Length: 117
Length: 109
Image (cartoon, rainbow over all chains, first blue to last red; front, side, top):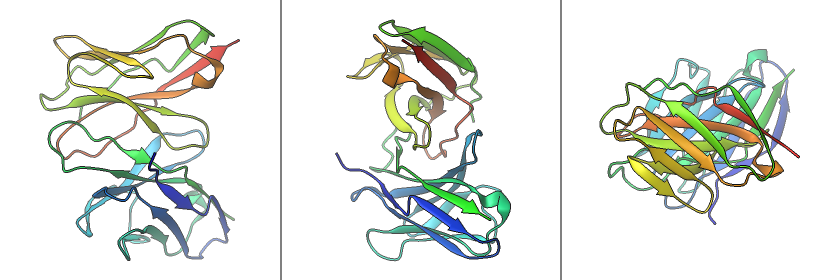
């Protein structure tokens, strides 16, 4: 079964450093997302991406965050200057066909645990 | 965005059927109801989706009454591996998928 792949599984960084989290969505999917989950809290939406541009973003997704689809397969989340409160599990997700009615069926990766020291 | 209410937690013994009900009183006409499962330190996993009446797949059944103001996820004969958080999410059209706090199901041996 096709799956969303995320690398690395764990990332430790110093406060103020830049990090790039990588994702390979399911190959024929068109919509891409980043979510994050702070330990013990809800899964929070960060950003959605379609047709090579951001379609929606949350308040969390400020100027320190950016996303990119540099080629036909990868989808990345960059945090320019990490803060302690960015420590969380970051999930990439993708969804498939054009929305012909119906709700979204998101397929999630297994996540990258980011620890900012 | 439809607000949902589900139990914070539930316990069940192995082998029992578990029903988790979610209320979504202000669900929009074009919203479907989707349920996800999340194990600790893993991403949510799609389980089942429906619009009305009953949907069944190899994992679960979903019951949605005619007024669509609630839905019930039914897990037959749960095992320890079904211990997880279950999320009910109405969404449709171009809305983003927003997760609530979900229902933490603990299966007891």
